Image (cartoon, rainbow, N blue to C red; front, side):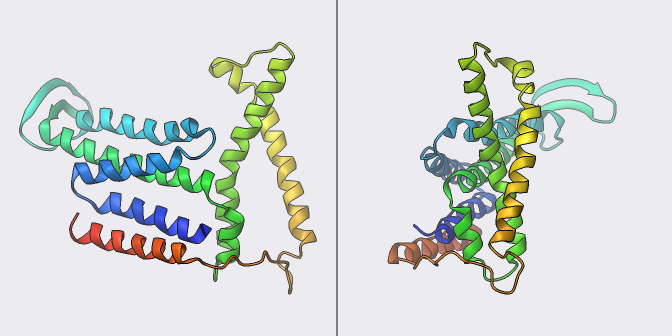
Length: 230
């Protein structure tokens, strides 16, 4: 599958989740994106990164919100925030917003770990430098996660076990040093390939298949359907 077609599909699913007004529709889209993320190695780490903020929003939003009249719980009055209470309308709105945030987070997780960012940069017709910057920034998260896992395994082989927040905090220094060294190597590789020059090297373009075109058409149809009827 073309990376561009995959990006279009993920963008369409995220846009549909943001536009849809029904809880069931957004939940189905989130589950679909979860199934897509499950194809990636080490997918629980990235899924947790998408679902934890959504769960926090679901817990906090009804308490600090001030929507509706069907009161389910009345709490104390807090300066600045006012009276803390929970209404059924706030719960419904918080659930919808949490599902939307989870769907968008899962779409970004799938984009970060499943798509070929080199192909995306190659397919860009304009603003190639901006696309390259976004691709490099996106690739940083999986790279750091892989490096951290490698450091932890190396330390385990020496009898040192990395557990808890304090133990993982000891990995920050080698991760930062590795990231800086990788940035220098990347800059040298880009210079060697003529980036920014008159005739830089390019990857051969991957031709689109009928499946890619059908996927892009389905993504466009889903986006229109979400804004009009879902």
